[in-house]
Image 1 (cartoon, rainbow, N blue to C red):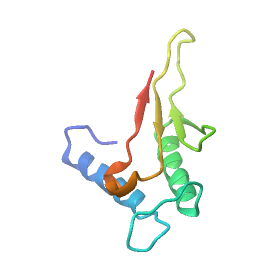
Image 2 (image 1 turned 90 degrees about the vertical axis):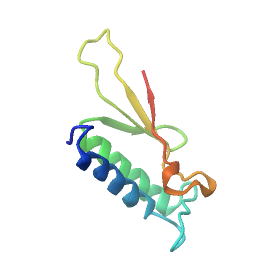
Image 3 (image 1 turned 90 degrees about the horizontal axis):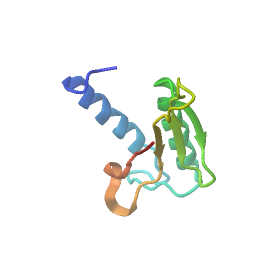
Image 4 (image 1 turned 30 degrees about the vertical axis):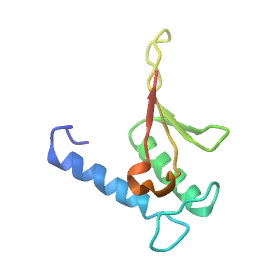
Length: 102
């Protein structure tokens, strides 16, 4: 993994966003319909990235990816990252917005 101030880190993030944006139900456009094959591929890709980062991963009842690190101390909460694998309208590839919860 790259340090956040390393230019390669930004490039790696940009490459992942491009990879995610390529998963579409319509050639030449970013269209990912709920529970479509492209949605499933996006879920699988984001889940893979989270597992590769050492997170435990699950889908919530609405098919949003939920990943988190297991708390080492039973009394501590661990951060949880949720990711919706659906583009939001015409916002395109920049619309993927992970949310961090404690």
